[in-house]
Image (tube, rainbow, N blue to C red; front, side, top):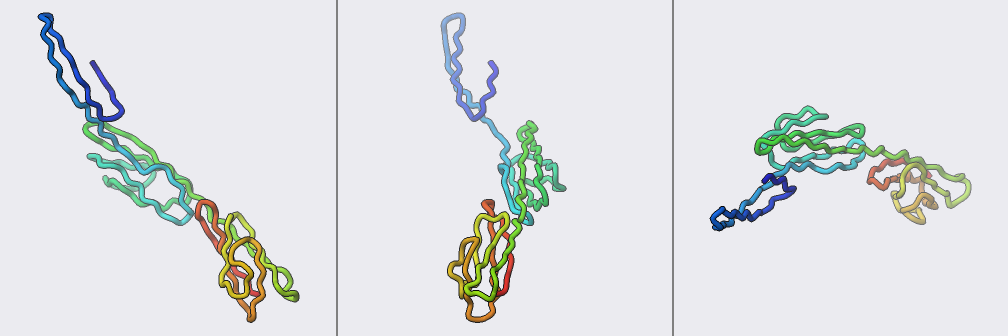
Length: 173
């Protein structure tokens, strides 16, 4: 009888002889598998560590790495990294894709300085905008804020995407 369990499994084997005598034996089939960090998304310029579970040897593709169980990568574009590991005489191949999200463009504009308060508007690919410093602003979050500073002030707006990628722009009021 051949078995190919997906996970460690205990089998009870019953044997019966032609004489009618029988005996039961227990057999444990241990399944050892190789795992790899699942596919992930990072922002451009960030690093990520890809790690594999213990194996006897490792061969990585998509990166120049030796026989190591983990690698740190900083891809500029979405990249798939391959790993072939040798474990108990078996060769197991896995892939992990690192998706690189772009840095969002962040732009800021203002209404005329002749009329206060000045309307500051942030735009771009961001979903959240945070403004600094808070002095003279009616709010510190949102794509549109009102500025009425007592002195000339440089405001910075930080735009962040749903993936957590960010960029900033400044404007003087």
